[in-house]
Length: 407
Image 1: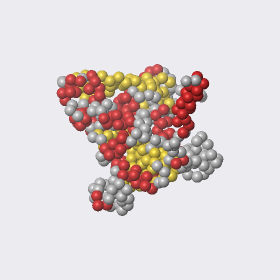
Image 2: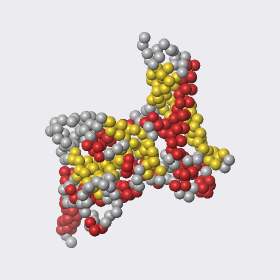
Image 3: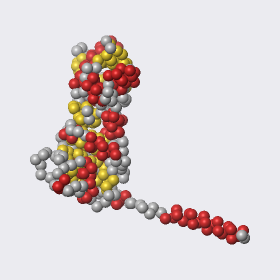
Image 4: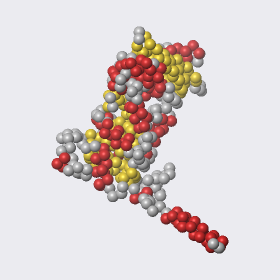
């Protein structure tokens, strides 16, 4: 074959292969043609409420004997979600609402999401779902259906926040915060900044599922409420046992939990009355935790050795001096006794509810595997044994700074 013809054949062959790359995105779906769900809220429906059965997934003759749930979805409106810090201007959509709130009912979360798709024209996507809020009624019932649907859906990120609301969860989808035009992004920002400022652990939905799957640990979720309609308050930890919510803490006990887990930075302050010095406020900055597993009379005993580094933020008695190191040592002693009382109350609270949110069972499983294999057959076994576990908390506090004061 002539060399010139050979080169032409090779060139034609290469060009024919490259032509497949020129087809472009033949199966593309523009972002404007997607219904991007940013947030979801899930509420229970009272049995006597009259709601529509949309029959998207079943016939009426199926007689589905399940209570209905109400799902409220917050969907991004293309072109209106602000892309920068500014809230005005044509690029941010002006004063138009950047989200569309849709309410649907269903017997399960999957059923409700199918009903949602039936009411919107564009295909729904959960890839940008960042916040899911469930009412306390839902959390205190069996959450297997909810967790199963979300875990099976590959679009749901493990860094999505799952929150438990005091009262109706749908109200969070309709708030109008002045600091952020998109309510879901405001809730997301509230939780993320709570983590960085030491107000709450990084308890994403994936962390919650991981804790629930362990035999020696129980899960917990953020417990939130609405104040003045648009203010979100983190009220405490909603702790679980047997897959259902069994109780909640107060805000300052979040700091106690983070201290026992050794989670930094510290973000909580404690206001208390020191006998000789009057009202004093200390702010915890750093925490260090060491857990020791021992056996006493054949039963496990857990010892927590905690160290807290704190600042003296406020002293309200100007007529009493606290400049000496001896005065600071007395304040440290009073603070230690008070904080140990908070720790012991939180431990007692969770033990009565059979909820090992501290993961003490995992320490026993790791350091005493023979005892664990002999006495624990499943997660329920450990949650019952946790109620009678012997626990001791030892605390050491050091005040780093007392601040500056001008006379």
